[in-house]
Length: 637
Image (cartoon, rainbow, N blue to C red; front, side):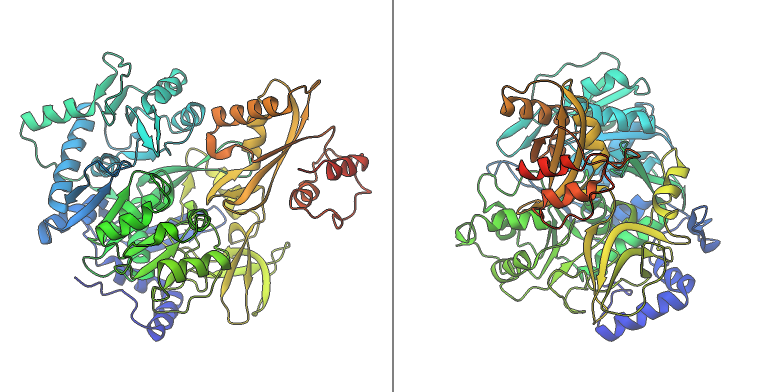
């Protein structure tokens, strides 16, 4: 199998890029013709960034699951769609062919229908990294229901917020999940969350660990029993619901600079085309290669590069339930060897963590099957890039350093494996269809090379978000109001003398911790829920493993006799409200925060102190009480 739109050379990249800029309608029309449609589109693109309004392939009708399943079940039925590697190395691997995956998806789609699901419903999925998670996602898409996957590490409060915001009527979960040597009881977390979610009518529970769980009669049903009902009726196929190109496919919640997570909305056609196009091109995917993306499907990386990108390309996607250090720090390399993995796509955080164990976990592992390496989630530092290149790729595998966001649906800036040049710590060049610009604080375009600025995109690409669920004004304010007629990414960026792009980090109040975006306001709100906290301010600081750590400055009410216990209680509050991923790495108790006379906290000063920059923190004379800065500096952790 070959892909007619796959970029073949540097010259071909430049030619395709130019074509995508000069005539985007014919460029994307040509690519979209490679997919299965019920009805072709009336208009390729209709857009206005002021509203904002973006429509791709308007008037077109399709179902993404026919492009991910039916066509491959027909042309390559026995090719592995999913290879699943369990948390426990002793547990059996599962391989699911395209023919079987289509059967499983149709059967579970019927289960959803039997439990009241219909086109347009929002369905929350809170599951382990098992094949049934992919099956649930595709079953929702099959019947036209909108899936909202919530990462398995989020707290009951975080789940409740997301279910309420989308008014989900069904939840799909499991009894529990393995995470390394821990067991996390998912069903009991869901039970707690659903106490404040009146919209939920049914909970479908997959029995993963045989845990004892409470089942609410009439409301909770077992996945396996519901499937058996479908099998008994010999239902093996259900036709895919015809969806409009701009119908919602899924909602995925992401942190912003204000406290409440926002539901990023992606639609059926544009997202499919973009996830597929970027997968096939960035990784230079070849037929029958094994693609191993180590992300969790609870994040956008898993949506685009475990599920929709690979499956729409007829690829083999490897899913891993566990963590990279269990049962030891050689687990990734054991998986690569066991399954002859060709493409490995992981996060700089994971690479830095595995680096800390030295070379011993790699010794004796055969990594010769690897052909392409990739990184995602945050910029990779040079040291980690070279370690990855030398020890995992043996200096023979191109490394694609991909920059993108939940909101972009897929990769926007990256080198193309083995085609365009890689440069350590640089995402390098935009993909066809992506028009980046750098602007100053006033929104003026910064021309030329060897310059830095705020990264914006001036023209729509098929995979971009359409709105934030239930609040279009928030979408406009967050992404399109900072600079006129531009999508603002929230990232700072350098364009070097060669015209290559390097992402320099967030310029707003959002942290990038282990590749996960966490809003400072969200963490502050959680800290402030602790009974003894008067006020807090949160900033990021450099962290050897995570990239960015969370540094919290906290004003506490009353005496602190046992500092360790109080800090532990505050961290526990954050875990309860958001999830363990948002726990502060450092908590410094302070008597006051550096504020302007109008009451604004000067996070710039706090950030510099957290980073260890104690001499050059700028002018403090405009502060209400400059003396608090000296106290904070003196007691810095």
